[in-house]
Length: 415
Image (tube, rainbow, N blue to C red; front, side, top):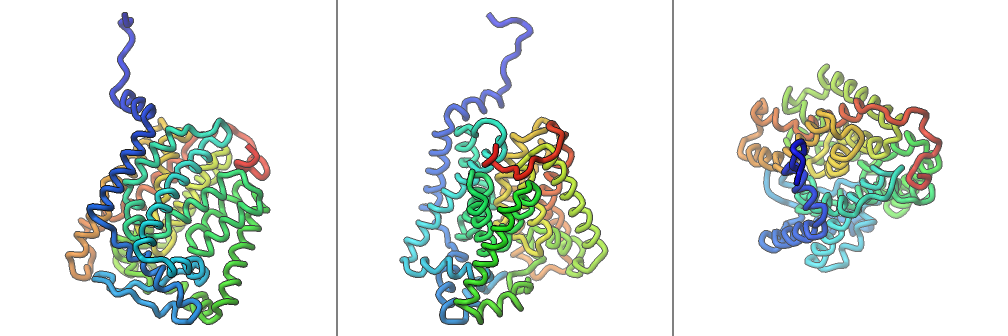
């Protein structure tokens, strides 16, 4: 007979316990539902088609003249990555298109599992190995986050690069392998380069040097193979954001995109932009310092990547696949019971599971070129930037439980 003072476990705890015990079945159900969705409504991976059709041009010339004609509001999709990325994508041109789609989907879903596993490993680097049930549940849930769905639907490379970067930082590898993997990921697409501050903050000097060497080496290799395309990209196109797409669109979830919609297209040169940039940089520096002091490896990495997504001129919503490691840190990291952590986690869940950005995109596409941008779309359109700022605040405000200096060369390989 239960004592009178004992209380029955909350419904949420009961559900959580049941899901933990049946994590494998939850993952299987999520995968089956994803497969069913792909069969009923097959994706049209336009970005993957660009990778496949444009990559051979790196050898013959005209890589950056390639254009895939689509429908407004972005009627043309060019190849926007460095020449080394085209070399990496070359094998896709040899495969039949249906096989490319199936293979890319399978590899991307596997990459999602790697992301969840490596994030969990960083989260408990100083303790036991991560529980398999936690990894399976987050993989199952991750399939339905908007940036992940968008990546899968468009055939984007984000999940693969995120998995490669996380594996390089979370798996016990030699400094050479760790740095080389991160450097090669950054040579394909510039956004993984924000993993570099993680290596510097955790004093992995050799790995950081090898990351720089690998990135430069891959770029040099592409330059030897395709000198004209490399010169054209690095001396002209790399800073041409207009070629990538409209920075003012709600598709762009960076700080610049949010300010363009709130304040107009001249926001980049305004006091508000520079003020916002300084504040975000200061907040990220504080969050990085706080995470380093308490030896919070995932907190360090999340800080670096969210800062990169905020300050990049263009961060399409599918770039924000780092929301999965971020949500894992908020749910299981130090200070997870604090109100700010719960608010930030709820904000991420509302924005990503609720698919807020696609709803705003559909509303935006029904309008002519909005000038000024409608406030009813502009304010909700800051969703990912707001979530990132809330997360940085949570990381910065988390108390230090293990005071002292960061050990030299702190990495999962030494824990």
